[in-house]
Length: 77
Image 1 (spheres, rainbow, N blue to C red):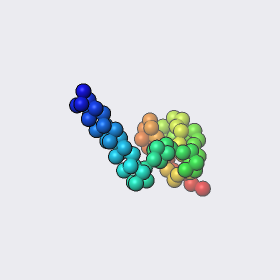
Image 2 (cartoon, helix red, strand yellow; image 1 turned 90 degrees about the vertical axis):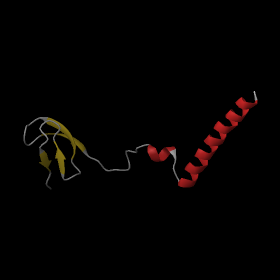
Image 3 (cartoon, one colour; image 1 turned 180 degrees about the vertical axis):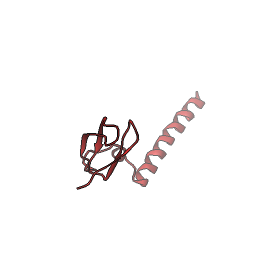
Image 4 (cartoon, rainbow, N blue to C red; image 1 turned 135 degrees about the vertical axis):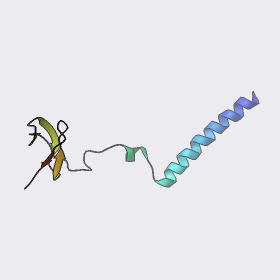
């Protein structure tokens, strides 16, 4: 009986220590959740320049790799 009580206290102590180190380190559950407002992605379906398959790319970047032929599609202007 006493051993079960000390094991329960050990588990609780471990959880409390983990919570305290997370708070001190500045880690929270919110920091692991991706937010749509963090980046300004502009997703668009385009035709690949090389294989002409439709792919979904982020046109706010300079280039994107095709998932079919692995060709690089460049965006200008």
